[in-house]
Image (cartoon, rainbow, N blue to C red; front, side):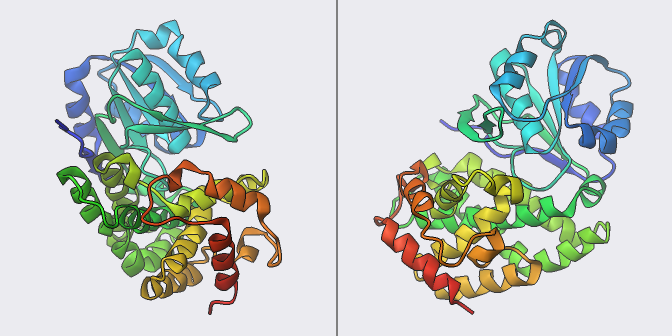
Length: 353
């Protein structure tokens, strides 16, 4: 039986009392792991909320969500004294915190300082090698107990994370519906697939305005709604559906493209995935949705062609296509997709207007 799989979260600038309320049942000794910039932006407010608690450990998590950092902190004697862990930052900081808490069987709370992924609420951590290359997906025993989101912190973070987050979030709906096509779903997967529309329509409808407001450092309803799509709606899908329905071609192509080692240094995850979403919609002949996403990407500057990812139009992409086709994200899709199909679709997208 699946229980308690929905994200619990607080979104707003006045979260201090809620923070104290939700962590109170878990103990008085707190360990903090955080990104340096995230703590500079939010640390004073969080520390003030924790003034009645004992901070037994407080450190920058490191530079990568890697086992080097995870092993360092899970073996730290001061951190082991904590009753609970609070992670503060973007995906990498939160993913390290979640794995350390999982290994030590300690409850984890998260504070999302950017809206780029759903890492703040999910039961997985995306782990990398020390050089930043992808290593594996770590599956946790449980999701974070509660997530805190301060929109003022997010609108003052670099806008590119929010921008890429919109691209990654729209892919969740497109991939979930595609990979679940023709299947008879259990309640949880049907629920997640239904919720996935909230990863898609609010961004297409409000994303351009939200991005404008975010660049102006203005917390608007549109900004808050898109934040909830990026973090909460996407996280709800991830927590609800069978893992087979969590992604498809858009993410497989992302992993294919990142065999070019410079790709992730020059482009963000969601930025690359948003290009893969266009390829998937075109290969599946979803022409109406392709037009909508293509037009949205053009408006906000997300990729619509190879040039936008610093690739040449005539690049043969052999290594990219090989890595794409063997990626596990294509293990459960409604029909076989070949290298030639992907290549032909990329070529077709190059001439799309």
